Length: 260
Image (cartoon, rainbow, N blue to C red; front, side, top):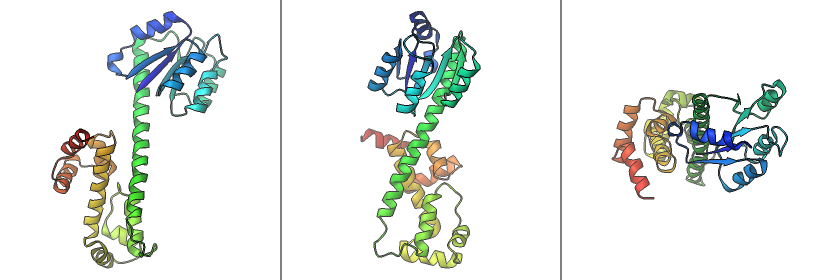
């Protein structure tokens, strides 16, 4: 995760670089710029996750840099530094969806906490984006696996579509049968005929396949993956995963990373 600090006063930049407790934050890169132009150049050459910027710069109007970042790099979280507690500026900052508006001078300990909260926000958004991305890939792969001769509105197709789009929910045979307007027994027979497994086994298989993909391709922790595929009980998830793959989620994840 990368941070860009922008301030046209060199002493303030140096103070921030020496005063903030960077060991608590562990940014990959902490970059600096003294004006609007330098900041734009940094954005064009680096991925910036968090921007900490003074808005009283001599080479540009107030909030211009924030507006430019919102337009070109909307995924960047912005934190404003200002010497003035002005209502209009604060209101514009809210309109630009800035994460925080802090007044100088701010204690370094407080600013460290502000940056820590910003990092948490970025991590959460990255995790959500990854989950959505892999979810779309997973759904496409599952859709491509459907045989051409199968009728799209068939009972099992509708049941499968529901399972895949609600993979993290509590899915019972009774609830699923009600959704597709058949009896639980009839739905079980249809699944046994088409997939050679019960509804419960099919749901387990889909959850384990998605869990494996997330552990291989994403940076989500095992606990987060367990939750994302519908297992709030972490120990139970590990037990099912080991039975399915022959190894624990952590072992599976380490093997996947070593084979990259």
